[in-house]
Image 1 (cartoon, rainbow, N blue to C red):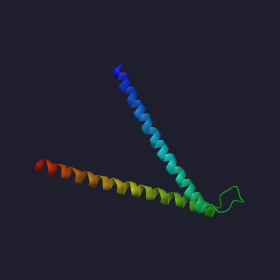
Image 2: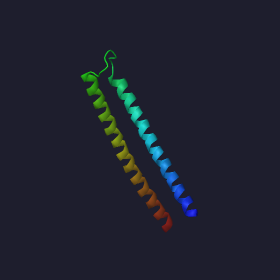
Image 3: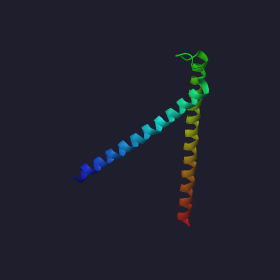
Image 4: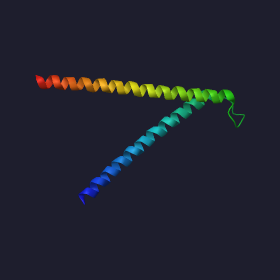
Length: 96
C-alpha cells in the first residue's frame, strides 16, 4: 500500500512539473506572439499578412529565440561557476 502512495506521489509531482513546463512555454509563446504582432503588424485592411509583415515577424521570432537561448546558456554558465565556488568554499571550510 505504501508503494502505491509513493508511486502516486511521484506521478502527481511529475504531473505538476509537466504542467509548470507547459505553463512556462505558453507564457513565453504568448509573450513572443504579442511582442512580434505589436512590432510588425501595421495594416488591418487585409486578411493576409503583407510580405514585409511576414518577414518582420519571422525576424522578430528568430531574434527572440536566439536571445532566449543565449540567456539560458549564460544562466547555466553562471550556475556552474556558482556551484564550483560553493563547493570550493565548503571544502575550504571543512579543512579548517
